Image (cartoon, rainbow, N blue to C red; front, side, top):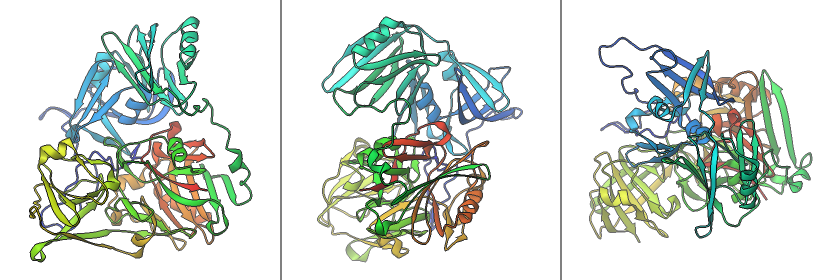
Length: 580
């Protein structure tokens, strides 16, 4: 749900001076919705959006206005990106720069808000400039954009990239999925044939022109204005893309089903449950965290993540900042903290060929320098931004770029301070190599050491869960020893997040098996966290941890995406998988 998560990772969360723990991650008060002194504008909310006839589950907020012209219209960022084709760029101050067919919209961090578990922005002016028609029908919001004609197809091969440019008679919606994309336009058969000869399979349908590369996967899609164009890029050579419908499950995994791997498909109390069970002591597949190689910044589809890590089974992992594409919670792989734990939230921890252990985890660290000066470290390798000192290593990626305004930094090599950095240098990016250690001061926090000072890090987890080889974080913790232990306040979750219904992803265990689980509502948005905990308890589970959910929820089996939260294959930051 970053897709999705309630965390709404764009938030800049600070610790107040003298306060020992971080404030809960809850959305800040939104900017004023009407001029001061004006009467409160009428609000309308809904849970479904229809885009040129394509229906999907997504929250929206309509404020004020007359007829079909709102004063404000708030739409989830994920819908704008994945269903309309809006491109976004994030800045170090949390602001967003959106662009759609040459029309720009700059959204400061203070003008972003949360719609339950989604980051949303106000788009009435952008939609008006593009010409999007709006209509409310109860909880359904309809978006209509005239379908333009495909005027011309152009192609080029800049280096290792194939590029096709579609010249259009007007703006169009651009929907993306694992198979490719659908551009809502009209095309001729000869244009479709030309696209096919250029390596882009094309099929005109009632929802528009469906496009997918004959080989490899799309890497970049964006729009331009004056004239209106769609630019599509993919690697010149690569693996064959998946077909439009779910791919067949890899025969190697099929051979394990019903033997060492069990796939349960259940319906309980209006909830569809998919559960993969495996005994880690007697299986050829082992549980592993799944992280994108190379850097913590970036998102990918769950199928891509599973393929990159050679996982035959995968579910999505913990929370992340969707705007900045950074992790928000514990992620430890092969003994290295790729992202440190935050806010005493729930984790699952395990070593090779062992059952995972579950609990809440904090990581306490201090920097110790000359004169026994000892200052606390707020977070390690994390997109969770708060006042104080934070620590970053090369596990974060080849570079660190500032995540907030006016940061300062110290580069530690061999235990000694080797370089000092001001805000402009951190904004530009600081390389991290080998055992480099970067200390970052935020919110006015000073780094009181100079060049040549010797520093050391003291680190202590709140429990032995932090000593395990692998750790995945999420929250809240749902079950321990068969008892429901749901406690949102203990993990800094808001009551609204606890009570809302949504698709869910859970990592759990019984007495001898690991369970990888997704839960989806059949007639509604999905179970609340309390309902989820009760369902898992009824299934006989002993321990269970809630992971990210909403449109992040996904299940991959042998390269085939079997579950899509809210019907959309949302991008995720990390996952949990079973790897040979």
